[in-house]
Amino acid sequence: MTSKLLFDRSPPLGDMSVETFLAEYWQKKPLLIRQAFKNFTAPISADELAGLSCEEEVNSRIVIEKGGDHPWQAIHGPMDEAVFAKMPETHWTLVVNDLEKYIPELAWITDRFRFIPEWHLDDLMSSWAAPQGTVGPHIDLYDVFILQGEGSRRWQISTQPVAEDNVIPDIAIRLQKEFSAEFEWILEQGDMMYLPAGVSHSGISIGESLSYSIGYRATSHADLVTDFIAHITNDLSINKTWQLPYHSQQKHPNEISPAAIAEVRRIFKHYLDPQHPELSRWFGCYVSDAKVDFLNECEQPVDSFSDLLILCQNSEIPLIRHPASRFAFTDDITPDASSKILFVDGKDYFVSKNFAYAVCDNRELNLQHITETCTEKEQRLLTEFYNSGKLYQFDVNW
Image 1 (cartoon, rainbow, N blue to C red):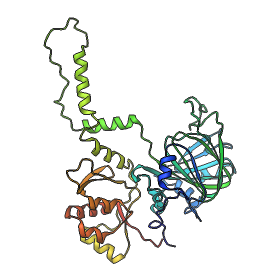
Image 2 (image 1 turned 90 degrees about the vertical axis):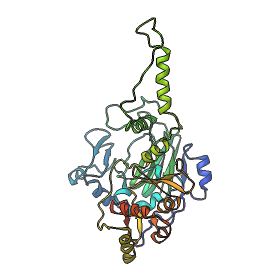
Image 3 (image 1 turned 180 degrees about the vertical axis):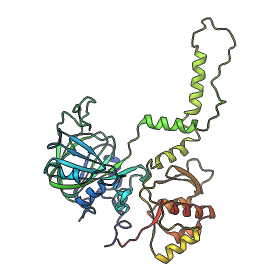
Image 4 (image 1 turned 120 degrees about the horizontal axis):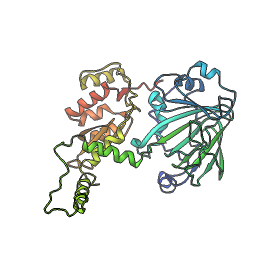
């Protein structure tokens, strides 16, 4: 079989253009797309998904609505045969996150969605459900595309605001106690729906079914501000202290004067200025940081870029960006139009624009083309990326 990893990058939006989707639906309202993935064949079976959930490093969970120790029981992985042996015949679901990182061959699914910036992608999640299996009515704080892989699911959806106290008490997962659907869709194999963040939804499996979710990062303002403050204060000298000169004696010794507050405001304005020169570099490192290391060690490390070229030429196996690594670039703070800052897994590198385009625009790298334009420093970077697993050889005949 020929891998789909390197082929068909068309947006799975049916007859709708990307421009229409972004203008009218993205982060605005739900959308149903019949046969978004035509002739779709699920690339992973239920048994393979279950086997993956038994591995120590894999993020997995089971939700049992009925037939467990209590209603809406949640079991977190790693799973084992004894866990599956106790499952009821109906009303339960297995969920596995980060599929494209554990099985890079599945990146062809997420690559179809590159009309949304790739650095914004969180993961490819899959869920297998027994008959009438569901994870219950809930909202997600992130945008998500849900693709039906096998079987059918009935989805009920509501766009109405949800009160924070509308939750089922005393269970380990956050589900809505009251849920009233506005409309209903039944997704068949190859169908897909898009849900903006905050839209309530509940999916119930019709027979056994398997679905895939392409989810995007939801970063709270609190996390953004906290991380930026940590970044700009990391190397800040301890000799920089808050000081307030007094030109005259205060009438009330314990009064916090307007001048004292003004000095605090001045300090904060200096470091939290939206035009702060470090903001772009920090943001690139922040969004490209994978947070968790999914990469495996390189099986055949090389000593130089020439060795890497020879390896790829002799094997005739393409060099691919690993889906567990995050690549992004910007020219927001570069000294000239011919350079970019490349971000890879939370680190930044000054490179030429041609190099940034060459490693970021496509998953497969054209080494011959890169060789014609890249510098010795950029060649060393490619060697470093390969030896650390960020780039790897992928045999298209899998």
